[in-house]
Image (cartoon, rainbow, N blue to C red; front, top):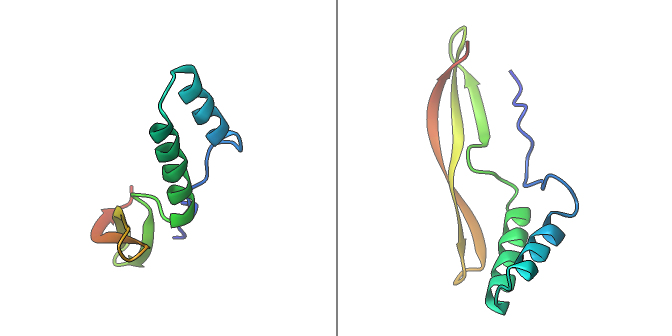
Length: 94
């Protein structure tokens, strides 16, 4: 069974960031909030993983799979690296 989950963060449309900034302008947000929103967008775009995304899968029985799922994404300012944590789970297909 191939995973049908797309890799990486894909905004719904290309103007996602523009709409977010426009919303901040209409709500009169501060400069710090603008910087945070742009930073969050770029980090999500650069990670390549989404929380809940299946990384590996292994067929065990007829409708049972062991999968490795992303459970958390972290950014280390000290090391300037993006890391993720994963958890092994067993999924039974219907």
